[in-house]
Length: 154
Image (cartoon, rainbow, N blue to C red; front, side):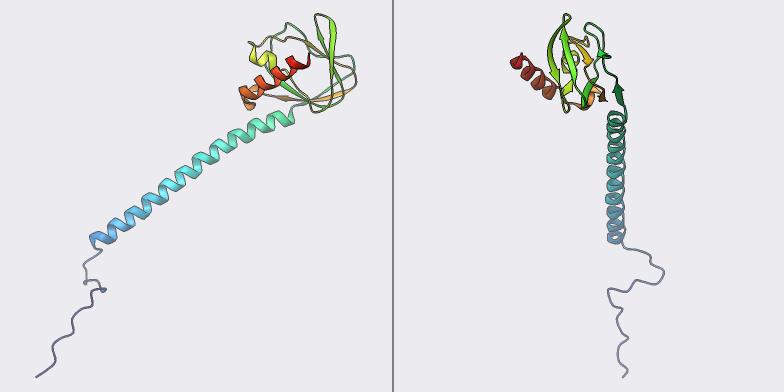
């Protein structure tokens, strides 16, 4: 008597049989996860690209203000914020000097909070370097806190 023919191992595929349903489902699941990850990375990259462009505008648009030049005039429209990098700016309200601001000072928050009308004149007392900061880059609560701090100082 001859021995029985060997049984095919379960791991071997049937000849010409293709993939099992389980193998197809696993492959589709892996593909779906990869597509979702790619879409999330792409959308996050676009958001970061937009933010980087805004920050670049804020940093690159640094103006030099000569002595005795007005940066902004009281009563004019505008909502940009200014970061004083170098120099001293005088603050005048109603034509009267009320303060002097030095490097590191953020200015223009009140106009941004109060409808876009400048509440003071900013005049360069020394040659200055100023960075223009779009207001959408600064949280409104931060601007409000800065304005409140300035009210207490006055």
